[in-house]
Amino acid sequence: MKSIAYGFLFAPEAYLGDPFNFIDVINIIFQGLRYLPYDYKAATTINIMNGVRVTRFIPRIFGLKLLVGTLLRTIPSMISIFSFTLVIFFIFATIGVQQFRSKFASCTDTNVMNRAECIGFYWNNVGLMSPRVWMNQSLLHFDSFGAAMLSLFVCSTTDNWLNYFLHTSMDIPTTLYDNPKRNHSPWNALFFCVFIVLVTWLVMRMLVGFFIDQFGVISGSKLLTERQRLWRDMNRIIQSLTPKQTPNVPQGSIRGKCYKFVHSRKFESAMVLIILGNFVYTATQSYDAPRTRGKDSLDTIFVLIYLIEVILKLVGNEV
Image (cartoon, rainbow, N blue to C red; front, top):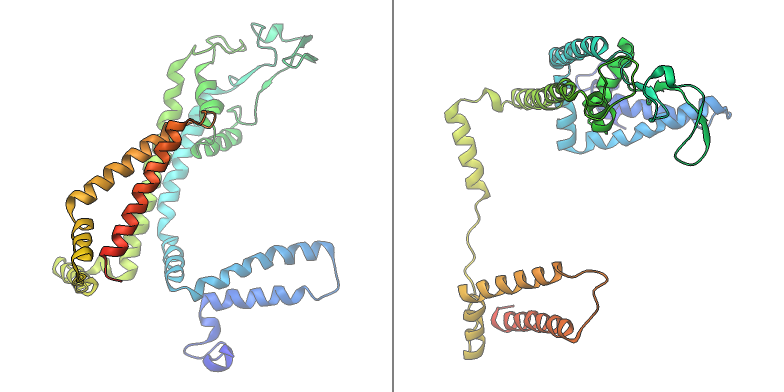
């Protein structure tokens, strides 16, 4: 229907002229492939691609479509930031290989002194006899440039980086192939702290700032002058204003007194103090604390106060 209405390809508003419609066509093709004769490998690929059908939401929600479109347009301009990030990884990977090569390895038996003694068998923590092996305790190390890049990538995510990198580097001994010693080289922590600051703090803020700046350029708000932005903001404020509704004060002596009482500053302040006291009382309770008559009475008092508040507002306010 859209192809008939807009034209399929060469019309001014062709259906395939919109990238999101092209994604819809791809989704429809893969959904149709499900009805072909079954093949395991093909079926796996088709099922994976059918997961992309969720993208059909994007062109139908204006805000999401604008966000995705802006993000795709900023990708070519963000190559410089990604290149800068890659240079940082290269520099720190090279330094890491020179500084920590073969130093993250240790013996599975922490009681031996060095690699020469890491032979034979020992009783491990679960009471089983295991061979002593000199090895890296995880896949994250700096024995090669590729392993260093992988380690820095994991470090940049801050996923358990304290145990994998910070504490491990601080326990590196002075002599190569000695077993780690706790806090023997604390200055090694500076390497990973500086890397974390540069990558997770500086680079991420550069990416966010660049995206916001490009979003302003694409939307046109970045091109406005100071007076134009002031007029736009004031116009938004004026359009958001609504007339203040005049309260309907109920007639009658009882309802009028209840209305004035529940709308007084003293009543609101008293209720704030009561709610705060109830919160403090609830926060001091524990799951294994025994119930006493005093606690039950205090809970009842709070419930009665809230019930009286509801009744006063029902009587005093105009429905």
